[in-house]
Image: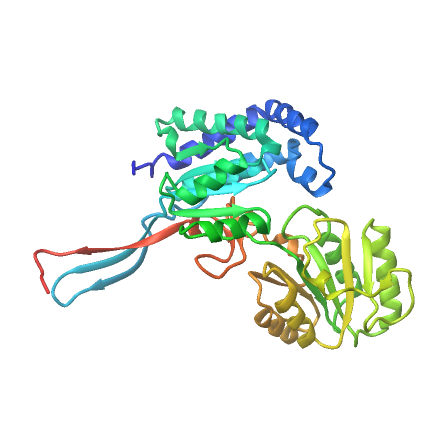
Length: 396
């Protein structure tokens, strides 16, 4: 692979300048995609729409990634062998990465920026919904690469239909080293079934929040509302579990139903264990607790203890994010240790599960698996490692 170590940050900064200068062109291309979209999915439309704020976010992601330390060549282990050999284990790029995603044009910038900073070559397969925006952003990538004499092959955009994409996954003609499917379970299952390539799964959200008996009402309400501030993202909040021992439970439950409904949410209260009557109170089938809503819907449920809440999170959630609202530090620590999610929060919103928000710059995905990476996947997670052994004729 061509050594691009000294040029990576220059390319990313150049790309940020191009994106900033071409804001109007990006928004115009995106307007074509929005006009062509005939689906009625509000969440999909939200992911697709690219306004000034998202354009500025793309440029900022490039600059943040450029400012990060180079993840390649970092020494992980050193051993001086008794026979005189010097043994070093260090980070190296994965090599070739394929990412398949839908509707979000900013992934074309952020995913490629993350892979490029880590020295990888990336193939981008975006959804047809964002074709005009993606093709323009891919052109900007090539402009930035060319400006610093970096080969065009580091960022490749694939314009393929579903059948051709499936053939690409099955046959792997480019000899990809890693696939990242960012889509529905059907895509993820197809990749797992038909490819022998290592996979990082950017899985579903379905995030939970537990309101402890030691919770402040105002804080709980603020965090819940923020968790639904965007419905199309994987770090959105879907389920709220409320401890039965919360002081003044019935009054707080009625107030919470009113406040969340007033915020424009479709509130469903599970009648099992609920205190008091309200039109939102109804039976909630177990299947609903497995669902990621990607809508304004939110489910509230009263539980008997933190242990019950943790058990529900570990059974039903997508393993993405979970939060506890509590003034009890020891209780919160037990929750953070017990909830089996990639990111766990005490008195904070699940909406912070994002590479940029956690100080990692751009992200390529949020992994809900435990190997090779977990949580936001940024430059530091898009490397492998290699053993380099230096000798002067040693034999065994």
